[in-house]
Image (cartoon, rainbow, N blue to C red):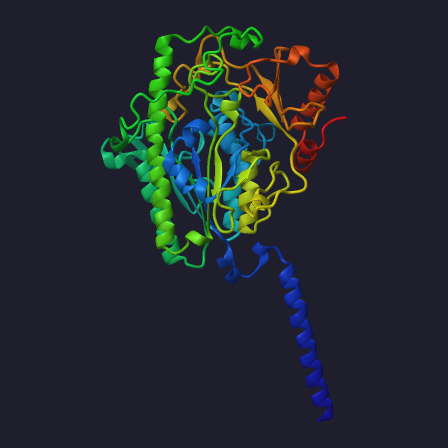
Length: 523
């Protein structure tokens, strides 16, 4: 009896020790390794990626300012490293720079577009697959990658990682009417009625997904990637917003229809000043861009209303940004993107959600490659080592990391002329009068660098561009934010060498090595 009692006590003690050790080990696990019951604490994420939305048009939308900016944290220095739709969207999905994805263009002919992404297998590891593996229901609604689904096994191909799929696969989706959609494996046609307006359809599908998920899968978090085609041209507004901004004009920034471009590279010097007819066209397009964005504001409002009605708003992050910026008249360039100028690279980014400081502003350099690792950390997933970006989560807690990038790479490798492959209207329509589509050509291949003040012995923030033609641009953005005066000719040999050394270190690096290079200016 004494032996049995001793054994029982010993077993009880061993069990207690085992439970104690188990609880300690459990506490040290990554969130995605914990039992499924803990997954209910994972936040929901609604990611809204607009198309060609620049800072000016965003800032003038009072509804978005009320719904997002006043309720969340604004990242004032959010940039894309390549100002073009498909390369930027690929970087967003993977958290990688273009020199590591290999995607520089929108069309398959030059190795880019959806076909380039599909053929290289990049879709096998994206934020969608990471979060789905972490227990999320994932939904995609809207524009995917330029050219989708050309080159896929079928027109109803669904990329890996998506629980719910709703993306146009034919017709004219950029026009917001008369398009086909791959709706979870079935092609559905939308016509020309008011109910077929693209942004509104996306909004309805999104809110239905949120409602179904929270109702039927209450223990499952969700991640939605929402990609309206607005305000990309033709920037068709819904009937309810046509004409609400009469006589709106594109901002007459100091660089608008720039008088003296003698210090610019040849591709800019070759542009004549904009005619009054061209300026009128820019203004008309600007008005439509603002009007069409109002439909996106409605989408945001509908999403917030649905989240609140389902009782999950307080556990949902809403992330709002754009795939690239947009110039309209700066430096004599008609409406378009694809340059190293501020208007094309600096994009809106606002995040609201649980614990995110309302009305706060972050002035550190942040990038589109940071979004995927941010979503991964919020979800409790570990991103692959190939990721170049860094998580923004500390900023969402009001904390500035002690180490952060001091510079970032900007790169561009085409196209320089008009896209020729427009099969099924799925490739991005050329922007009206965009310099990239002109016979005289757009920006040559280049690599560039943005650097914070006081990192290279200069007091100002720098924008440096090195073209493969041997030409260069250098602007001190602290004194010349409009990038009017190219100061490269007067720069010291030491500064020029340090700029080139830093660019070389960045463009040849990936992952942690790239992040290290961003933090370490060459001596």
